[in-house]
Image 1 (tube, rainbow, N blue to C red):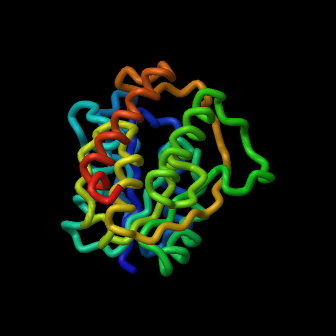
Image 2 (spheres, helix red, strand yellow; image 1 turned 90 degrees about the vertical axis):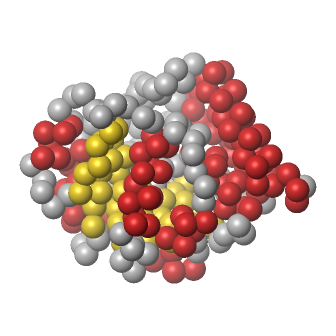
Length: 236
């Protein structure tokens, strides 16, 4: 499959170069696109030194979700058959990209999970993130019927046909919740793939006023409620 590796980026100058090196090593034959979401820390200079890497630049920060939305639109416009997404902060291991693509042979979406194997070693998740992930994952399971264990892992692989079915418009961190609800509405095939639990910077901020866990929780619930009303209300 003609594959695009898509990396949303915001102020990751310290790590993006190493991540791109690993992507190049493990995703030979794939094209790479970084969506620079208005970085102010020198990330753009790192990307300029890598002419083989495609770059979309937001002049100002528009949000994690918008970076993915724009990357998906690029993939569809340029005829890619598969898209792999991962972050630029070294939370995800590019060596797993071939596994994601292999699993995509029997699925429309392959989603990484840091919790599908309870016995797996890994860094402890920040308590508020783990608590919110557990709550939202349980809600997504109840709404969609997908037996997922990690609603928010950014390491995924998508068939382009699945992306073409979506109508994504959530610019912030709630975009994965849109994906789950719309995937269920379109009856897409979803599988999870175990990924490492890596938190190199557990103090990393949520942008857009979402650092407070309760504010983030209310925002996630609003996204879920809206998507259910848009896509699943008639079937419930």
